[in-house]
Length: 311
Image (cartoon, rainbow, N blue to C red):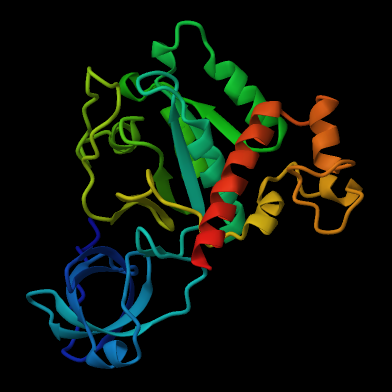
């Protein structure tokens, strides 16, 4: 005999439920009940405003049902965040996926190194995706791949429009709350749509005049791939700054630099102008990529200049 269909779970008014915020539009939050996968439209309880806590996408929350039929509720409590990013506002990320296009627009390795340093600062995992490899006829992306694989980063080559290597990317996402980052036009939305095999988010266009992308994502949203695996489609990561990192601490977030700094002659070495610097010596000997070091210097000087302007 066939098994009887399970009747839907009807929650009572006032019943407390746990879930994750998957989208925020103004003061309205869409919260997914993680047990039964139902989405509720929620407002934040007034006491949260008094405590100066605003819910953000990615927050694990407790909410009370106000109308089960209309799937309406009120957020009562925000659980402790493991990670909080101010811009774009999102919490509890466990992995950042940095997308770099091999062509159109050209690879922006300065932005990539800023983003990788930021992931190290946050203490979360980082994956590099080299997209549009089909457009790079000289296969220059292979040099980029070699540099970052050598220092320990996972690098995946993709051709999103033709779905090449999408399965490898899906494997890397598993079990994480992932955010895709990268300049406009690198193919973030195309990759997300390829992962879900349907149109989840708008794909941008590349301006023929300047080969730069037009940002099409306007609101942060989490999309569930499977249990405990989400993708955040979010604006803002193409231009975010890393001002939370102090210039003197920057070297700690370049993964191959930290141990080399122990060989510096001077305490408090900035690794920029000093002689007998362990990092500069490693660059001269070819043990550290010179391009990475040059970009470190640029980022250091940017941070230093902002710090000086504060005073």
